[in-house]
Image 1 (tube, one colour):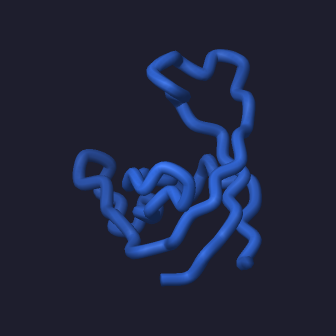
Image 2: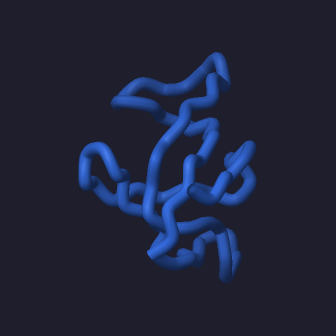
Length: 70
């Protein structure tokens, strides 16, 4: 897996709706793309493992501001 720093605007951050559209940085290891069947989108974003917590997260392409390989 490739390692990246992602600058991302989540819809929900730490259980709270992100009404101010703040962006957050995540150190991740990219794994694979995911689809959104409801929207009929075959590549809605990517799944990645958070390097700090070890938890798996999903990042939608339309909410990623930057992705820098490290």
